[in-house]
Structures are given as structure tokens and as C-alpha cells.
Length: 305
Image (cartoon, rainbow, N blue to C red):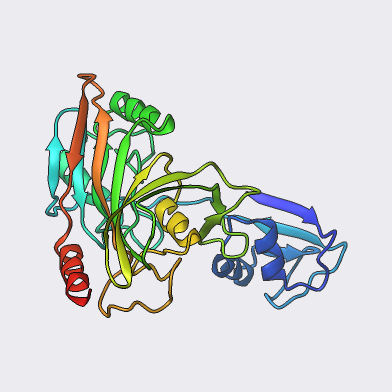
């Protein structure tokens, strides 16, 4: 795909920064590769990434067609909470990526599901995400549902769309929350500067609502239950950080240095998922116990208090 336009402002900015600011879906590292490969032209000529744009420059950007990698089934131990001909519920461990993406073509939950379910996975989300209706972050643990056919996928996706699914998460957050219960009602969108992050964004964000309930207070931390009313990317992580209580271990939205060496990522666990079954029409609720690392942290916090 070729995109062309004329520079109308931002004169004097490096070409790599300028194009990234104009075509937001491109990372700067990928754009620098395009520059090195001669896929970015200024007035018909190849330029270096240090070139500074001038008003009136004709920019030509050649975006090579994306090539989807072949995703292969892989045998792996899956903690299956429930399975039938329509759905499968998995207790996802920490460190597992849900579906293949850049840098993660193997070892993902999808690779394991493809081996376990064979051809019985919905195809609505394409070859990279068969069966996947929703996802949780790599370092978030807990319940995740996948669908085995397109009918089930559409029905579960509709429940997600209208926010009728029950989703309860458990987290340890920095600081002592004084109120027993609270609601964070703040729209979430892409961070205006760091495109890899999300943020509370009143201008371009989408509605996001998180209910939280204090389960236990410790000397420096609070153990909370968070229930999602909506399901935006990084919602709980962004919302809890926005009220001054980032999740322990979350170095993206919280302190850059974790107070517990060896802790990998945020202490966030998807403990409860409730749905209307796509065939029976009955409400079903699935529970995943806290992982051992999480329980060990709670015991440690209890000893410190």
C-alpha cells in the first residue's frame, strides 16, 4: 500500500518523527527499517532518518503488505476449568501471551488451544486469534474464555459488547485505600505521547467504568476486588493508577522499581467470569483460585503489618 501527502506544517522535524506523528499506527523502529529499505521517499528520493522535513515536501510511504505468519499447534499443559462443544475456559498462567503477535509466534495460549481443540475453534478473529473473544495481559493470570464455533463466538461477543458478562479481578495496589467501595468512571484512550500505553483521556477516550471493593488493608498496600463494567485495554491498571493506587508490580503505570525483587509484572488476577451459556441459555460462573505467587505475597504483607 502506498500513501502520499505534502508536508504542510512541522517543518524542521526529523522525517522518522514526522511520519510517526502522521501515521500513528507505525512504530518508530519499524519506520526506521522502512527508511533503510528505501520505502520512504521525499520528493522521489531516498533519505536518511535524520532528514528534516520542509513545508512542500512530497512524502511517499510504501507499506509492504503484512504477511501473517503460520501459527502451529503446540502441545502444552492447559489448566482447563470447563469445556464443552461450544466453549472452553482456561486459567491462564503468568507470562503467557494470549495470541500470536510480533515477537510471540509460539508458546501462546492460541498455540495450545489449536493443539487441544484441533479444528474446533471459531474463525471470526482470523488465523492469528482462532477462538479468542477477549484477552488478558501477559502478566495477568486467571479465567479466559475461548469459543469453538462462530455461533458461540458471536453470542459471547455480544455479551461483552453490552457489558452483561461478570468479570471480577483481584489485585494488590500501592497505598492504603480509605473507602470500602468506590467507582472509577473515567474514559480510557491511547496515551497522547507514549503510544504503547493507555491513559485516562477525556478528549478521545472511550467510556470505562471500574468498581472496586477493599478486601484487606496492609501497612503499605491494599488487597482489592475490581469488577469491570466495561472492558478497555489495561482498564484496571490505568484506573487504579489514576486514583493514586497503581497495582503492585506494574512498572508501566506505577513505580518503575518494584519493592519486591523477582516479582514479574502486575499482581492482577481474573478470578471470576460469568456468562450466559450460548446453547443452554443458563448463567454459568467460573472461578480461578489465586496463583501461588499471589498468595505468598499476601502472607508476606500480613507479616509486615
